[in-house]
Image 1: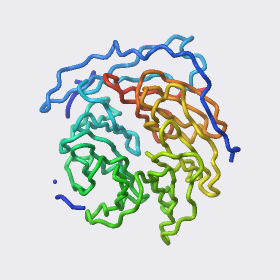
Image 2: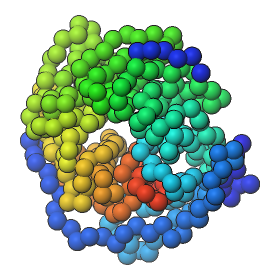
Image 3: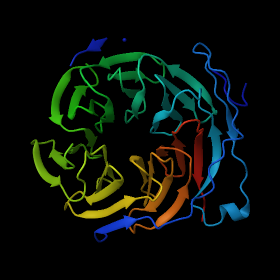
Length: 358
């Protein structure tokens, strides 16, 4: 075990009304401070990380806030930006990519579990299997492979190759038997998790499986999102309203009632059954939209962009709830919706926020 806190490879080839929600203009908030973060020299053989409790905010700072900061985890080295972040299904392991390495953090013990090595380029995407036993990682230039890891041992199980360009997102089906991933080349590839055999490919730059296992959403370079019925390979809906540029990410939410997609500066939500556009979100300080996640228990969506601002809005009413400035570009809610993890941006720590009780 690698102490970090206070406690001492086979290869395979190949409902609401329609609403445009703009966040109201806000004065630039005070930048997030990293002055309390301690960094340690980086050694590939003996990686270390530092975690520390967040500074206790004043009552005035906490007033009317949806989130309060709980914990800060320093990144291993300031040489690389964190482009990928994910939580295990039972919320006990946080995984992030930093440079070409993957770090697994034990959230119960607040210490680094292990580092995974194998990629030769930036880690562009991470995703746990539904049972949390496997972790899939996608690479960027010059290593656009997808690798499958055993979480308990850290062993690399498969390397899925054949993508000519950066991996944009990864998803498992509901049973964890199939993995699909999109790439910048505009092709979604589907593989068998158990055997590593290639299944099929589809036109698309991003992909998501529905929670009921019946549908697959395919984001297109022309701004469309195609909903594929997996029982018959038919397209019950093609979502065209709004986006005009490449769909960079797609996801189902709220028991598959909502289909979400990002393109450029915007996040759009549709009613999956009817195809009706429900909301369009963007933020004054967002820049290029990079990531989003849902807390369906509170009807909250968190989204972040290139300018390192994180916005939280009610995805039913469109109301702005909270803004976290100068903090990160990647977001992930815990499965119970009580915590939000934020990372990304040069020299930014990973921060864990807790939803305040009413």
